[in-house]
Length: 432
Image (cartoon, rainbow, N blue to C red; front, side, top):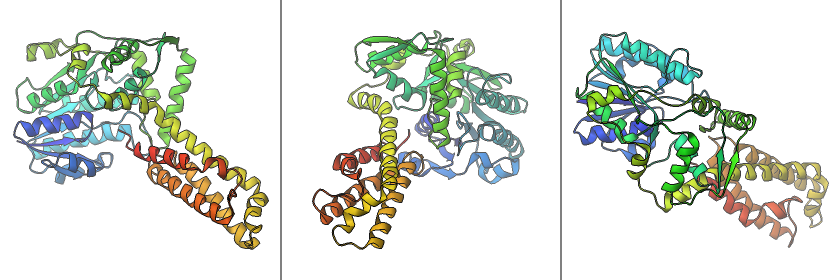
């Protein structure tokens, strides 16, 4: 079969692409940025399209030509600079399903989410429910799969946060309104997709892909802590509801800078309402229940790379905030002490105009780098720029006079350790 996988480079999409390729099918992935996907899955074809822009059935006609089945693994947690939840999960999907009916593609697998309903408290769930309803109304061989919290050997979204929390020496307990969360392994989701595509399960049906037993978030974090080989937390800290909400609101602000962090209010809503469904329908067609949280963790390797990632996941925002603060302060302090910064140059024979232009240029560069490091798209270049500017300040500062620098704070901030910190930030540029 020729299978089109929307969002084929995401957590679920990648597993679906691998599973379908292993079964001998011809797979094409579709997404907004497929450059790295082409390297990871060179045996698949790739189409670069922004799904949010495919809002009419006619927009999909050329894309769908020649396919036997479509699997939708695309989605967005919350609106952001590059994400429009409703456009991706509802508007574009209605157009897709309508076009599939027009061109004769009968087999469609929709990856939804447990808890999706028209009156859900988040746009993420409401838009998923809208797409599910639009698909279910069509006379096609559709299957709607609704996974719970997806666990995988690779870290992605919420599981990255869980690994980070599991790496802390303290445990956060007493979170208000915590309800059970049911998990599922990503390979079980991919297996369910393959069965649906190949007609191995009944079509025109919904299936909740969840384990039988639910767990609270602190219990899941504790299980991950053991999986990482770490002892139980030394200290348990209660988390007030107000503190929790402020933290996730700050995550919303970070999201506006382009970071697709899981610490956003949509995630908090899911934590408070729970992630759970009824696995009985799937158990009837599959003949056995899905594996439990402990079984899922046993299926995944845990080594030094997982422990490193857990610690660095929470360290990354601290590194970026520190770099931004240092460079912004450096520029602002130099701006308020312009004469002192110029004096280091004029005292060694450099004319006043050249000194002023040079110092002002350095201040502008400092401020620009301090702001750019906070924006997801410009962060890698800003980190490299910080490392390069550190070398420039060291060289010219030494050339002008031993111990003298182009600005009064530079001697303390723009050092080789600062350059190394910027290079570490660059190494952590990949968000997922």
